[in-house]
Image (tube, rainbow, N blue to C red; front, side):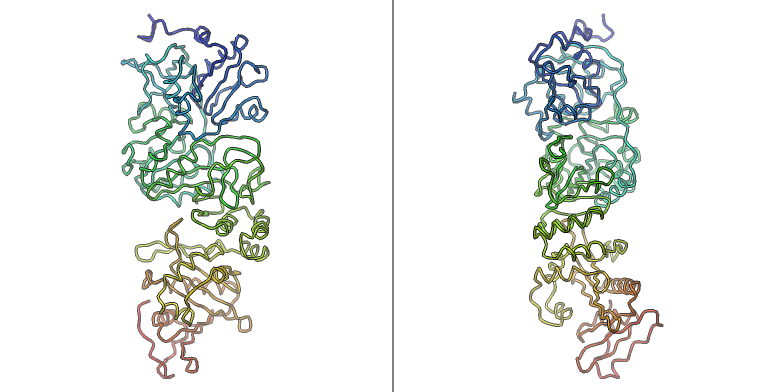
Length: 637
């Protein structure tokens, strides 16, 4: 009697089990850190008797001797996701790559398009009910096992037992071999400074109650570090690693607001250290489900506020994302990126995020490129992409024109490559400005003047305007009443053309400057107020103009904007500000009055004239009544 009750007659040696495999078979290998290493080594020992074997798998981490040249004609590997252990073989033509969405791989097996003759897997020992367990990797393995004619499993007591759909009756497994090898581990690298910057920018997009998809690597780990003040996060992700443990252990992830499997974190596999494996072992709060459920965009979208973080190798100026190849050289795979990008996009309040360093090869090449390299494949299309994040900030692309996309992406590219990108924008007529003007605008952008302020119950961002804000400025213009337009432009102006808006947003950050107040983010980001100045070089005084949208008045925005504008102008060596205000614009008169600016009535032009010189004592407000003007009203700013 074996020490595993119920397995009598099926518990055999490795060589005995693998003798059942015949030439011409297609073999499925268990995934990732759950790769059945003992069976893989045994398979390679029997290579001489086998011909024309296809070995297919998702990403694996163990040794992959079956791709060695000496096994040509015996084994040929087919990767659904390319790992470092088979990358050279794929590049050299000794192995294959099948590009496919992770959610669709199980249907390949079920339909017979990619039949499975043999499945080699690793499982936890059977429990008292005779059920083994897939442990840390469920992904596509359950379907592969269900479709296989022969299933051989390593029994390993080191494999965690996980909840959800990970149990498998031992009766579904034909042969067993014993092993006690440590489960493969993949320690998480420590995020460097660039990854931390990316993580900070991406985390700003994630609100309380968001449902997370975080993969593996330094960037997802960095994002997680900036979420330790969030509440009631959810987790629905194809995989996660040690970087998420802190959020789980500290109670940031509660899954209370999820629709799909509420109260439980949902994944299809994990890859990390033994600490992670011990955490998921028998943990009722973590559920493992197959990839065609976890990665189904229709399932993903049922959760609200899905924040999906994925990476890329290149993003071109139109928003096309390459994530699986370097030119003609295949590097990784499609994986679950498109599944989650589309699922998050369909989710109420969802945010699909592509996060990547701005450069590669130690800064030698840009990842934001004029066009994808020859041979590079589009994984996420320009129609699917929403947010792109680098260490230089966030670009929101969805629903934007090519011009708006290109300008936004240049803004988050590495400074060393922005000139090249701007030249391309000009040469391809993506934007109407000259390359020189584009260069000046982007190089001069004062990033350190981005501020956040709370006005009432809303936190708004005040930042310098840039060319890709022109559409937002036009939206603000068309939201104004005719009275507001008249007070701002001193005429009955009925339209703001794209060219005018681009000019107003293309300031040079010294002689012409503009600050915008923005509410919302991403597709909901909008301008609610603008303050600008134009410098008169003869007097060294800057003429100002301020407009606040009707929905955000009487919150103190105009006063804050003017104060920041004056602080900026003084720092540029400007002596002071002026302004002209029509007599009916009571609110703006009161704003300047409250700030201590001199206000005098100009009887010839019938308007108020404002003057404020920096560095001087606050001057008393002139008594406009003595000048024959309408009295300066007392209106709340």
